[in-house]
Image (cartoon, rainbow, N blue to C red):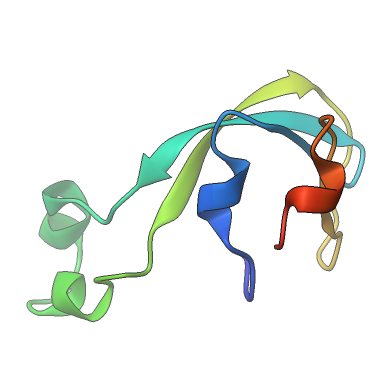
Amino acid sequence: MTRGIRLNVLVDRRFRIGDVECVGRRLAEPCSHLQSLSPVGALRALVRRDGLRAGIVGGGTLRVGDPVVPLDEHDGDAKL
């Protein structure tokens, strides 16, 4: 889980969290499968709380509190 990060700027970009290098694939909205596993009304509470589907390019260790750091040529452009 992340807070205060604009995930949409990471779509199609490489980034690092801890030692793990990733590439953002697409935004992921809460889905009906999640609703089927949750109490009634839970999906409504998650509207506009999208996630990011990402591929792992290089493995490593993630720790709570590790920053999300853009890695591509537009590093300065990403306002996370």
